[in-house]
Structure formats: C-alpha cells, structure tokens
Length: 348
Ligand SMILES: NC(=O)c1ccc[n+]([C@@H]2O[C@H](COP(=O)([O-])OP(=O)(O)OC[C@H]3O[C@@H](n4cnc5c(N)ncnc54)[C@H](OP(=O)(O)O)[C@@H]3O)[C@@H](O)[C@H]2O)c1
Image (cartoon, rainbow, N blue to C red; front, side):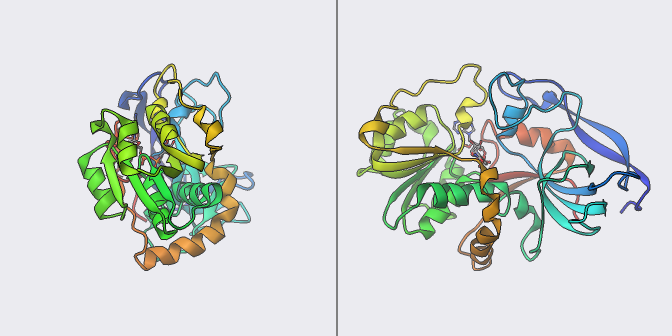
C-alpha cells in the first residue's frame, strides 16, 4: 500500500484514436504515469480514488467512435485514459459526501489511481457482505438496467412469455432471473453451447437456444413461443428484432436496452417488420440506466436479500490486471465473455 501524499506510479489504459468497425486491442495502450495520492491543494469537492475493479460495458464502443450523430455519451479523448464504471476506495477527499476509507462505485478512470474532480456519479457502498465486484454488475449499472427495464418498462405479469437476447451476459442473466421471480415463462438466446447450458442449468430459464445455429430466427422463436412473446428484452437488435416483431403478441412490450449487433457496423441494418407494432399495439421503449438511479435504494431492498438467499445468482468473467483490460473490452463484441466482464485492478 502506497503512503498517502506520496507520488506513486500510475498504470493507465490510454485510448489511442477513434475506431471504425470492430474495436481492437491496439486501439488502446498501457502506459505508466505518476500521481500524488492526495487531492491537490485548492481542489474543492474532489476525491482521490484507488481503483479496485473496472467494468467492461458495450456502450463503451459508442464512446470509441468520433460521434457525428446525437448520442447519450461523449467520445473518449484520444491520448487520455479510458473512463467508465468501476469500484474504488477513497484515499483522500475534499468533498463533503466522501471520506477517506469509503468504498464507492460509479465513474472512474481505467488506471490504478484516479483524481475525480466532479464526482457526480459515485455512489457510496453501504453493504460489503457481498462480493465488492458485484458493484460493477448485479449491484451496479447493469443490475439497475435489468431491474428497471423489466419491472418499470415491461411490468411483467405471472404467466407471461418473456424473451431475452444476449441472455447470459451482465444484464441478460438478471432479466431472465427477475422474470422467473415474477412468475413468467422465460426463454433466452446466446451465442454458444456453454452459454445456453448456463441459461438452462444455472439461471433457471425455461428454455434457451444458440442463435448462431438457427438458420431461421423467426422459426426458432415460433418453436420456443408457440403462443407468442409478451415481453422482449432487447439487447442485440438487427435480424433478431425483426424475428421477434413477427412473434410478438397483442399488447406486447419491448424494452430496448441495447443493440450490440449494430455497434460495429458502419451502416446499421434496417428493421423490416416494424409495422407489426401497429396491429399488435406493441409498446417499444428505450431504456437508460441513468434515468433509474433514484430507484437504487428500493432496488437494493429487493436484490440484496435475493442474493443472500440464493434466489439470484450472478456469473462474472474476471480478467486480472489493467494490462488485460483491452482484451476484455473488445471480447464483448465477439461473445468471448461468459457473464459480466470486469477487470481486477487491485484487491482492496
Ligand atoms: N440502456 C442501458 O442503460 C444499458 C445498460 C447496460 C447494457 N446495455 C446494453 O445491453 C446489452 C447487453 O449488455 P451487457 O453489459 O449485458 O453485455 P454482455 O451481454 O455481458 O456482453 C455482450 C454480449 O453480447 C453478445 N453479442 C456480441 N455481438 C453480438 C452480435 N453481433 N449479435 C448478438 N449478440 C452479440 C455476446 O454474447 P453471445 O455470445 O450471446 O453472442 C456478448 O457476450 C448491450 O446491447 C448493451 O449495450 C444497455
């Protein structure tokens, strides 16, 4: 443990330059700078963090693009460290809300230590009787996304038919388990046999299929949902969305959480079956985790006991060390991760 106030080396993951197409490890580089483990004299409302875990999330691909369209995020700055969600320990603070020794989750840098001068999104961790890494996943942004997307946007009712794509990932595995807790019939899709087995045997989905082995996605969904789909939790977009629209039931709901199949395409694919929305009176609604953080205390009341009682399980894919962060991040776009992808920067 470095001494407070001392200058120490600070390993960082630097964003090289804007990306088109699939991101590559070489779009990032590891460098070592130095940092004083103290908030600089005169810096008000700042915190100095020791990063413990960082989170790899698909939306970060959008931040790698030079954005020439409206977006909910800013581009990464070439030559600067990547930033995103993580779990950290406060080493020093001039902010009234945080003090030395606090554990927090929220926005930080992809580096060993970060000086955060505007900690708008740092939530103090109050419960440490669960794995701290969970605050990058089930107890962090993906957890709030799954909870709000399913319960707030889709209002599941007992007996309804729920379909989740990218179902074994950080968000999908939770959506399926929440839908089971709500008494729904749940089917998920994922991109490998290992993931399909997890869905059926670990997360308790009623059925699951490998979308990469299905020549006709609409037929696969018809096979799994002979009576149609009430709720679709959309994580992938593209051809899958088209196939789902054909299989939706009247008054169905679609929470549009993500469209990962489109993120690396220079020209997004079209959606051909949108007119299904009219006759079936389907409600499609976009979802941003950030709109739902006010529900966090209520969310914790549900999820913490569910974790402790074993009603919800969570699978993580943990990479060791900042130098492995670029590989972990780009792996999201080829399905290399099995469960929530995160990186250990340091153990507390
Ligand atoms: N709106 C929000 O606030 C919010 C918050 C969090 C996440 N999201 C979105 O939710 C989705 C899931 O995020 P996550 O964090 O849970 O990621 P994740 O599922 O843990 O990881 C991404 C997975 O996407 C699948 N995938 C990659 N390329 C694909 C393609 N071309 N077609 C179909 N599937 C593909 C891969 O699984 P397979 O092996 O199964 O292909 C991969 O493992 C993403 O679209 C993300 O952008 C949105």
